[in-house]
Image (tube, rainbow over all chains, first blue to last red; front, side, top):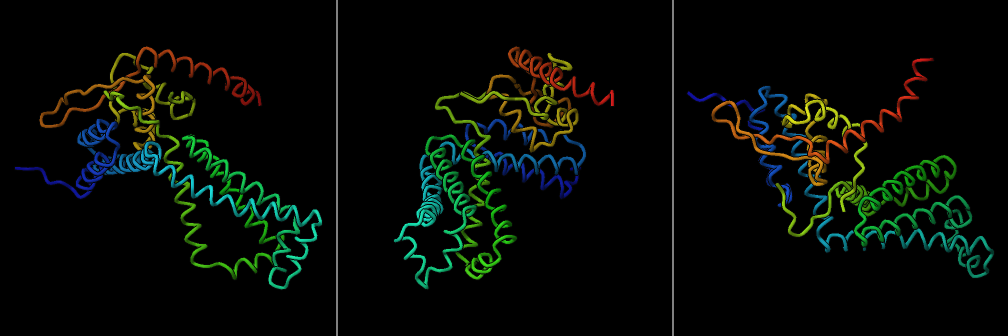
Length: 219
Length: 104
């Protein structure tokens, strides 16, 4: 007679099997350890919780290892961050030029099509925000290119937190600018925001994964 | 060179439970019950300690027939020295705060 397998036990086995398959090659013994461990857990609920944790660990390790060990992935992320830093840096530089009283900048902003932009260029806090935001993303891009993923992740988390504070600040202190940017909220803006969140999560996964050393023996 | 920080609360909990019986081997689930850490926290931590050479592991045959061998862990001699140092440093750092809390 064979013991009946509960759905929790069945899911646990599937989760750990997926986790073992997902883990990077050098960490495959850990996948076997996860699979073996659930067989020793008597309680099905505990077993499922354990397996879920294993699956999460494996996903994080796989994503992190992808960025840590593959140059193409790092180039892609680094280039994206580099491009992301250009716009805020340009805005901050133009803002500084505008505030210094440059005639060309004043003429540009005085044109009817660009008048709304005077709200940004004329505000010192906003120019400082764009400068800091651009510098953070630029530093993060350089950190990715230099394989310092922990630094890149932490910089991007600071950038994200700062962006949220900025949004709140704009909403509270610059209602006119908020109304303008809210009407400009397009699908591409939302996709970019989602992409940024995914990117931060990816970097966060990579920050805890150690660099794969060629020929390193495991166990 | 891997980063050696290992001063987080979770790492210290694992060090403490492994140091209680330093020569005996412990399984992942057992460690989880001793430390109250979930597998999603425990495995990355064990992997990191193993990469840093502070933890050793081996496969142990199960006592119950038909069950696969389990992974067991214990601190290496370097790991034990490191864990003792980390724990004593943390205790020294938190002692004045605990004393203040008692006085108030």
